Each structure stands twice: as C-alpha cells, then as structure tokens.
Length: 147
Image (cartoon, rainbow, N blue to C red):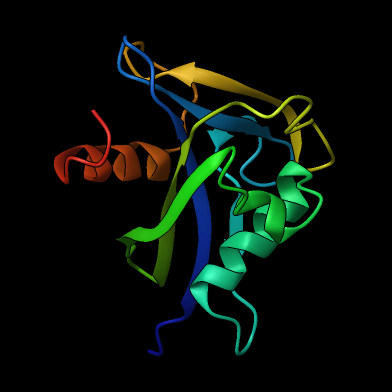
C-alpha cells in the first residue's frame, strides 16, 4: 500500500503580553469547518515551505502581499519551524513563528476561508482549537520560543 504524502506550511502569529501572549486564529469555514486554526495550506510543486506559508497567509488572512508579512515594523519572523507528521497518511506541515511587535490595524479580516478572526490569550483555554495548533503551540513552548 502506497502512503499518500501531503506537504504544507503556515504561520503562527504570536503577540507578547504581560499575561503570556496571544495568538492570531481564524475560524475555518471550509474543511475542517468550525475550528479555530492558523493560516496555511498545501505546498505547490517546486514551492518551498517558506513560500507556501507566505502565499497561504496572504490568501487566507488577506495580507496585501508577502512584503507586508515581512514588514519589521509589525513582525519579527524567521524560519523557526515545527514539523507535524500524521499517520495513516504522511502530512508534513511546517509552522513558522512570527512575533508580532505591533498589531496592524484592519488586518486580518474575515473572508471565504475564515468566518471570524481574532487574537486569543494563551493563558485561557481556546474552545474548538484545531489539534494541530495545540501541538504546534506546545512544541514552540517546549523550545522556549513562546511562554
């Protein structure tokens, strides 16, 4: 039996606060619908994981362009990543951490992929949080990159 492999990438936006920080999430409209998740998706042929994360975030969170996501006034983004592999198929997903210095006004906004968007404090449980985001937050915490 051949195992199907999927590859994808996305961003976890983290805003530090005295209470431990907030993460930016969107409530997915298409599959898996109703869960809070981060922007991201499947990698295209010959596209790097980094390029995939930038493209998917522009598409799903309405960023005007990739330069906006790399604007150092708002974001301190590097290629720090967490990789998730799932069975029975292989789903390799890289999440890049972006530390938000200042929340940009009017971004992101709901669209066809996300019925709602918002900042959530990590100190409180987040209902309907997608299990991959839980895993990603836990791994970034273990690595000391977020509190």
